[in-house]
Length: 280
Image: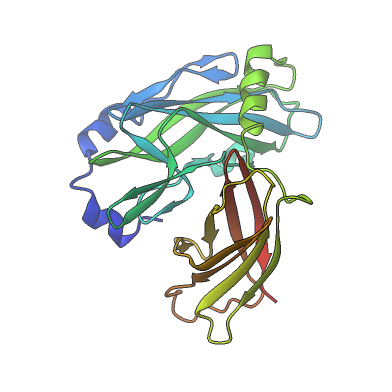
């Protein structure tokens, strides 16, 4: 989702660059595509052959140039999250895409969530007929920004064959990407309590933090699409427990939190934990 902050902050969109470099199909080298580049960086897709269930493991690799950033699943105040799609007639669909631990970038009043170094987004595809050799077109769409923001779209040709074999190099890239995802809740790192004030204006959290975590972790809560909670009030650390309140902000008109699931990412030193908050 591109917010109002995105349109007012960025000076222009480099459409000529987009048209010149983004829509050219790329030849396949085994299951690794060639890189496609634009002014702010480059990207490619790595994919393994379908398994017996028709599941394909892969990764979208993005390498921003120095000074440029690309975005997490919720970009913050501005930006475009990564997206992969396939033609409806291809028999291939994206069943899951995951997001490595991001950074928060503060530039005045604008706060971005993303990556300023090479990043790989692991994904899983579902193939309707894994035993039928097929060459399909994958479309990747990302945002890559510095003082300008360039919507970057590219098409990649993938040959998804059940007998295509597994390349050690490709498997290593995907395994490495999966190893950089936030961890799941555990005994020493978790959300132990959460609630919303009666007026719906404040989210109250209590976290269990690792013993070696910094005194003040960084907490990012994501609600409906395009809505991110950054601000914290009344943060208090007592031993390994951290309590904090976060203003909910203005939600979409008519939005009802009941029955919804929000995401939470906690960055605490060298560790990061991601889970969801269910509102009954």
